[in-house]
Each structure stands twice: as structure tokens, then as C-alpha cells.
Amino acid sequence: MVTKHFNDSFERISEEKRNRILSTAISEFANRGFTSANTNTIAQKAGISVGSLYKYFETKEDFFLTVVDHGITQLEKTLESILSMDLDMFGKIEKIIRIIQTHSRINQDIIRLYNEMTTESNYELITRLSGELESLSAKCYIEMINLAKKEGTIASDVDSNLSAFLLDNIFMTLQFSYSTVYYKERMKIYLGEDIFDKDEDVVTGVMRVIRRALGG
Image (cartoon, rainbow, N blue to C red; front, side, top):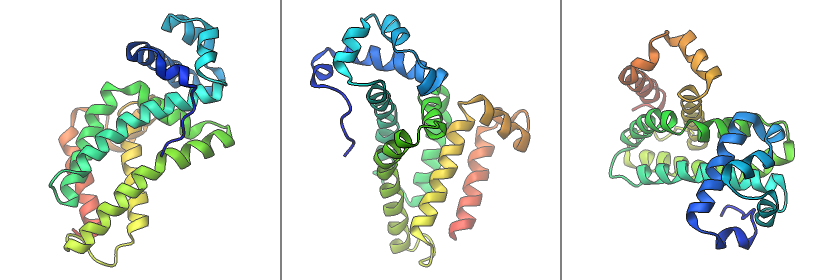
């Protein structure tokens, strides 16, 4: 369960107001980082006072954690819906890759926020976030791989935990590559300037690598 980082008063305001505050904060934190993001700017753009903001959150860190929770929860809901589909492991992985291509382009601020979270220099903040937000993905991927081994879809001697970790890193890199400037340029160096016009080639190529790596 993800820890709650906001006061009860935040839950009592309207859903529209909560979403307005969170979407404004996602953009500010994603573009400026935790340290440089300005809560005064967020409050002004969201149409609330700074005093109200700190009635909802005890600290800037709690505010940031709530914003990250909100953004990543949207990704996790999408992941859970795919993993519940009646598909074999490779079918689910392909669905995830296609969703990443679409979702990362539409929701660039959320992905950039996730990228900012993983590169933020505040060690204590990262420790809290990684434990809360990565555990669900890890559990889902490990269970998916264990089921595939049981069904004979992949070799029984595959290391489930290591494979889940490597899969998650592939997904994370793809998310960043479709939404952040640095990773976009990096992907073009390896795969060509027109790679973002070749989504099917990316899906086919990644799936070929994953199938061969896992023995599918």
C-alpha cells in the first residue's frame, strides 16, 4: 500500500480542484525538478493560495510525494489492466510496449516527473519513493514470468526476479525515450533520426530480443 503524504483536508476538496492542483504540480516538478520547483508558482497557476497548499501538505517533500504517487498510479492502473488480459506473457509484453509508445507521448509531464524522481539527488526522498512505487511493478512482472514458466511458455530455468528487473528497465527506458529530450536523442543515435516514425519496427525488434532472451 502506498503511504498517504497529504492531510485529510486535501481529500475533502472537490475532485476537480485536486486534479487541478496535481496536474499543475506535475508540470512544475517535471520541468524544474524537486529542488527548483516553486510552490508559490504552483499555487498561483492552480488558483489557490500558498496557505491553502500547506493546509493540504505539511512539507514540500510531502507535496512532491503526493504528486508522484498520483502520476505513477495512473501508469500502474494501465499496467494492471494489461496484466489481467487473457494473453500469454509475450502478448502482454507487446501490449505494454504499445501502450508505452502512446501513453508516453500523450503524458510527457508524468514520464518526465518519473525521470526527475529517479535522478533527484535527495537520497532519502528517492529511498521512500522507490520502495513504495516500484514494489507493485516488481510483483506483477515476477508473477507474470512465474506463470509463463509454469505454462511452458518460457524455459523453466529462467531467473524470474532478474528477468522482471530487466524487463522493467526496458519499459522504463522506452518511456523516457518517447517523452524526454535526452533519451529521445539517445534513441536516435542508436536507431536513426526517423525512429519515432517507425513504431512497428520498434515493437517487432524489442519483442524479438525479449523472446530470444527468455527462450520463447
